[in-house]
Length: 99
Image (cartoon, rainbow, N blue to C red; front, side, top):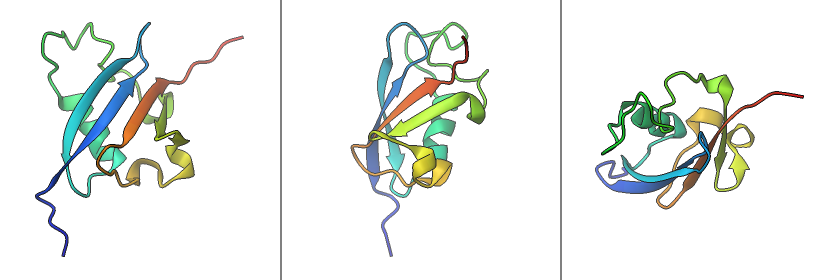
């Protein structure tokens, strides 16, 4: 049986402003992409007003985001159910359209 009390550190790059916000988050062993994204939604970032922060993803739905885990789109893995490992890097891009 796995020890789910162990923690992993996952690095997050949010490309929602002019420059990517880079943060690290600690999650329990066995966490998935959906757990990380839920934690980002709940997390209160020091010195940053969530309302004005590029770290806030509240107005974006899952279909409005492109998630790249260690250089691979999560849709090519197990989507939001993709298991995270210590040291993983998840890049989050808002989907844009235009012409």
